[in-house]
Amino acid sequence: MDTNVGALTIIFTEFYYWVTVPMMFLIHVGFCMYEVGASRRKNHIHTLMKNTMLIPLVTITFYFFGWWIYFAFPNGPGITGGLVENTSALPWSEIMGTHLGGPGVNDADAVPLGNAAWARLNGVFWAAFLLFSWTAASIVSGATIERIRPTAFWIVAVLVGSVTWIIDAAWGWHPDGWMVTQLGYHDAYASGVIHAIAGGAALGVIIPLGPRLGKFAADGSARNINPHNKWLVTIGLFLIYCGFWGFYVACNVPIIDHGTIGGAEGKVAFTATTIYLTPTTLSAIVFNFLMSLSGGLLAGYVVSRGEAFWTYSCGLAGVIAASAGNDLYHPIQAMLVGAVGAVCAYKLHYWVENRFKLDDPIGAVAVHGYTGFIGLVIAGFMLWGHPATAAYHETTTPITPWGNFLGAVIMFGVLGFLPAFVVSKILNGMGMLRVPPAVELVGLDMSEDMAAEMDAIEVSQADIAEARRLGLLNG
Amino acid sequence: MTGIEFMSTTIVETWKGADLSQLGPIYPMVGSETILVGIGMAFWIAFHFKQAAIEKKEMAADAEAARSPERLRRVFAGEAKG
Image (cartoon, rainbow over all chains, first blue to last red; front, side, top):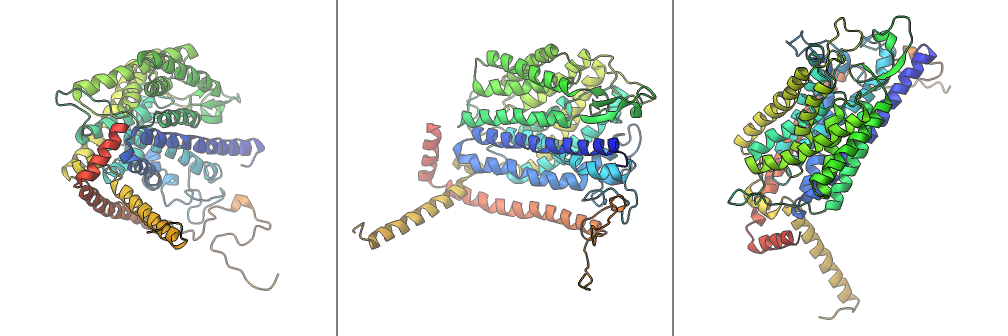
């Protein structure tokens, strides 16, 4: 903050990340609308509250330990080194609160970068990552509607939102993460680090959770439990598209002098970079987000025969499929990758549903999980040989098909499916995972509905008594 | 100005002439962070236990309501309408 350019760079970066936070809030609003629209009337409030309450739970746990995990775990630990010391992300650090950047009271210089810069950036950077955490947990929420107990879901939400996804970010979405430096893993806009892991976690929960009552007939054929309000569902998806702009922008570092991170010596070259500190531009986002969305929508409309829910979901799948490489793709490549992702999501959803009798009411596993996985594999081939690591690394690690494939397995399977499956099995064994069948049949909102009925009767009786007192009613 | 000495829960007592480059944390009671984290984590864990107890009661009430055939019929009739 001691030069004009330095101060402007820091303040601009602070403001840049701040703007992404309210934009990404729209993703959560969209998810809530989407889930409530997809649920039946007897489950509305329960569905809404289940998703809403993950916000405070993931927020506070991400403050307590999630943020620290990101900075502490890039080496595994135990894969390429030990825990990385970074006191600024500890919840008791002075820098984890209102701080003007000068010397600390009990901790003179809390961070290696210096208090001046990090005091401005820590909170907005934390919040941007936190909004990704909500998204990851919210993806799982959609797959579990109408039969999971809130108690169980919120434990899973904390697991995914504040532990597993941020471990994967430390490994594969950090300039020094071991998956980046050792495997050449590349996932610029989180096909894997958000979508594959959340889709894998959703699969890990719905297997022990089981299908909704009535979803499958005695002969094993699937029944359609349609959204009660397709309008709400589609507007919810539209809002998720809007929020994705914030998501994409938050995945970049807005301004950095490439000369200071290993670029040409003596040359000042300010640029935006990916989270890996590899150069890209905001134009890349604009081109490729819109083109991959378009590819997904076009393919989705055709493959679903114009069905609204799946057309919108396929738009999302298109973006998710291309996200791993959207910092580099040509826009037409992004469009084609998006189209492939959309068709795969649609086909795989119904194939898995019929083959394995799995009930994923909103297609979360397919749209996020399978598509994220496929997007990573495609990026491994499309970007083969491009440097995965930033300029300051002594050795350049290239992107490879096998590196991204292994990364996809780690994201979807190791950090997504496995922990969520184990925790859900334990919760199921304790009788805490699923609501009782009688409650599921009568609806999860029954106690609220009955209370509302009683209130209405009471008010009605009071009105009748008043009408009699005024002589408007006799008898 | 009035001769009264003011105290502050933060490290700032006046902004007049303040050198921002020398100011760090300005939240109240710097030094209490570890205690605050302990209280915060207890609040978080307590929520899960309290909420689980509330949920248990609600589930029992919902299950009781499901024993009414008339109520079930109303729910299913509503469901059939979409």
